[in-house]
Length: 313
Image (cartoon, rainbow, N blue to C red; front, side, top):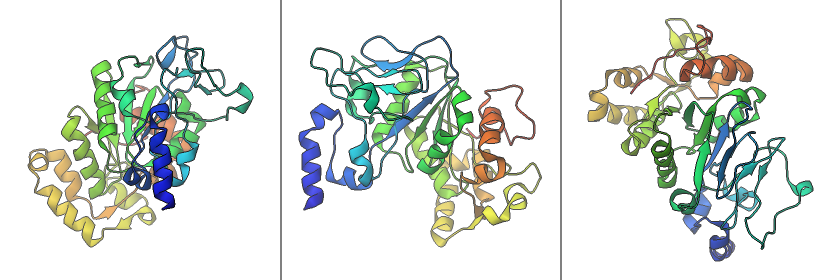
């Protein structure tokens, strides 16, 4: 009853919040977030119905657990998304009826707003992310959070997105909108080295066929021919019966049969490795300054030993 009451209260305020909330969505945490990151420069970066602000760390959009729903920074209609010195997101509503929080009440760190139908379809909202060289979709919220906590990550010219596991429709539609507005900006996916990581990528690809798979691959945690299994066996987890059944199902899919690089990666999955293994092997700074730039083609000078730069399409 308490959950239904909470859902009802959120439903009553959904027009002000700009997000549709259901009881199922509240329980499942079906609210997606995204983060823009790029070097400091003179170009404005904003998601706005007005003028852009300064060019700091951009916007966070990620799916939240139910217990964190009350902490979402959701904006009323007509709000401006801008970025102030120090990396704070300004959520000042446009118009005379402003009830913006004073600066002293704003919390430091990433701020954001939920991906909603309005964000995807409202013609008054225009996306602008000057300086971004790539869009990286990561499978898991835990890896997403690790990147956000790394000071080195703010130097990467990236738009970082997570669907927090298997993505919902809004997350995929958001990627479609980014592609429509910036078709020249490549979109990459990174997930766990396991059958679910591949299945999530294939689900994205059904509606985002331009998305490229950038790992994890069998050689990402070691430069040795043994790859993952020879590098850090303590990081590997055994495949469960469900994993093996899913692997067999993936190998029977026509899009996998027709794609040799993907098929070989799946066939080699005798253990599974999580994205967080990259942090254990490289550390946050090397991960952001060497491995990811090499993976995504963001730095021609990236170290040759920073991991495989292969891709599966």
